[in-house]
Image 1: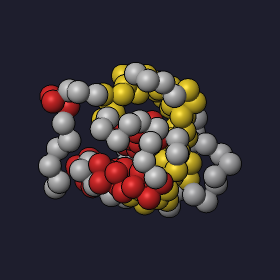
Image 2: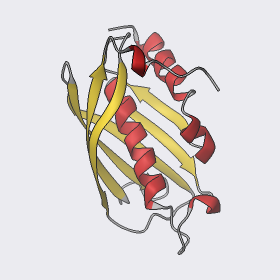
Image 3: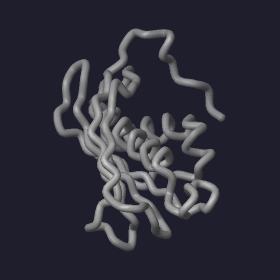
Image 4: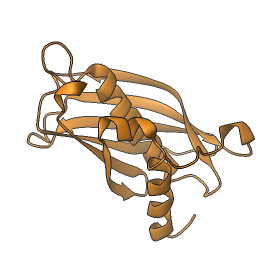
Length: 150
């Protein structure tokens, strides 16, 4: 694997190509081996009819955090794709700043099992949602090449 500095640069470069993350205003807050945290400030445009962060946005944020957590343990030439995920919405997602942390539970050569947890920064011990996912290590697939930078 590459050194931590180039690992973070590789993750940040890939994250910067995520049009969806740019659209919703998410940022990459932390990159470590097997763990990534994303942050998303509250934005009323991302809420559902009761003013809570929409479940689709919560799921998207956690899926991305989980995917990049897996990506940190993959070979430098690999890409990552989500195979499946399950989300538990534990309580209404309200807060000023949301944090989604993805952690690898079981690394593998072709599949990785990952979890992600969504919290409001002001109440980090009270998870809003949990995600369990399987991520695929993608090698030698020209049809899964990185998109050009936005």
